[in-house]
Structures are given as structure tokens and as C-alpha cells.
Amino acid sequence: MGRTFFVFLNEYRVNIAIRMLLHTNKSVSEIGYACGYESLPFFFKKFKQLHKLSPASYRKKHKK
Image 1 (tube, one colour):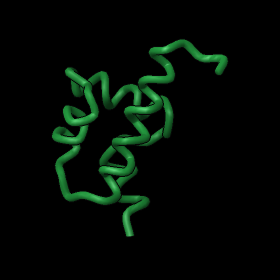
Image 2 (cartoon, helix red, strand yellow):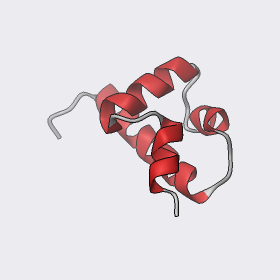
Image 3 (cartoon, helix red, strand yellow):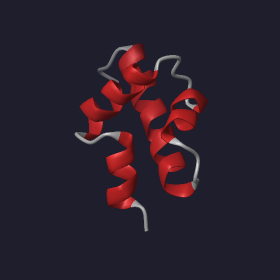
């Protein structure tokens, strides 16, 4: 796949977080923990690296 396991794992977790952001009313913190992140700052950092937005901004921009 051309990526390390941890890069793949973070991409997978962020993609699950995106689904939860768009389809639930859970808080961003709850979503971060539910996706397996033990540290919210690390979750925010990885999310922003992949999508150039914070999780809350992503939700606001994409939620219908």
C-alpha cells in the first residue's frame, strides 16, 4: 500500500471520525475517543494534517 501501518491506521480512524461527525450529534471529543485516540490534541493534529480543517470546522462545512 506504500504506507506504514500507523499512517494507514490514522487515516482509517480519521475516516471513521468523519462519518461520525456527519451522521451523529456526538461531541468532537467523544468522537476522537470513540475512534481510538487516547489524546485529543493528537486526534486534532492528525485530522488537520489530512483535511486541512479542524474536526469541528469540517463538520460545520460539510454537514447538511
